[in-house]
Image (tube, rainbow, N blue to C red; front, side, top):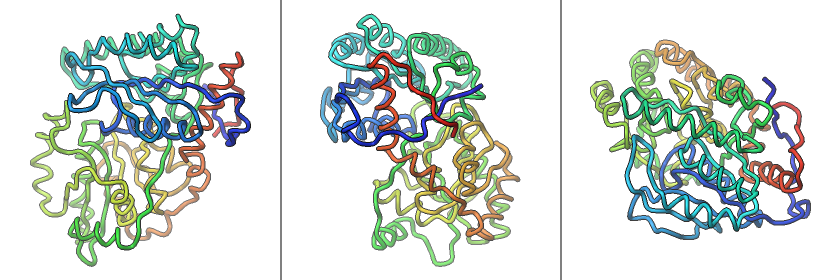
Length: 411
């Protein structure tokens, strides 16, 4: 399967014929915490910073959130949620808003998986608007009747969205080549690396972070940044840690990201509890960090780990964020997930789910960290939010000019 990848794009507004009104639609948006929501937020803000009029249509998943607001130049519209099905939300008000907003937009960008994407794609095409689908990952919900039905409905919605889209953006050629879903739409697929950015952190910020995390002199810090969710493979790292401690007695894991009351992950958290409790002070949850604290975290870690388990994980922007801080990464050998390390050499790849292999990789990196710096410069440049926005801008502009986007050289 050949997936087109945009390498170099115009980055000046002087090269864009007209500024655009862009509607971005997705089920969850910030402050919801996930790779998908962070991606969409960075994309929206970068497009707005380039002068475009950007509106995000999403759910009011938390009733305390405002129905409408403007953040960093991005207008956010949140219809009320009527009820939930598994991790999805039902909000008929979104369809009326979609009709109104799509009429005003020049182009519609849908993020999938989401049930509403199919309906919004139909609305957009009825209104004659170009549709670009950003397909984040294959959906794989846990076992259970409700989840099985949700999987079927979401899969059907994804197909409708893909069929009605002129272009499908994915995060990497590697994942697209191995996705049964994307292979059916190969002529439409373009690969654009996800946007990655960190706030600058000072020496004082790093000192404050070390105090907050209670890091003692001589400790060997292993980092993991994720939600506490089934597909993240938290138990793989937890089971690898005792072997690492044999080689490095002061080794310790810092886990950043949501870990309490993560919706839909209650059973997984209960399963993990005895495993993590057995590690005692060698495993520390820090919760959601501020942007500056997150940078200090990556700068403090000697290595970070992404031990993902299945195709619900498609890339892992945290790997690029780690590389921005010159911190190597150990990642699962899964399509998409392995791309940042394989593209740059800034770390190691291990067989997904293999705790012994992960322990061996951690020992190898901690023994000679400088040997795994690699050459991440090209990947980091293409992951800058402005570069990502420029690539979307090129797609949107060419669709509006009734041309298919021109394929660039492979990544």
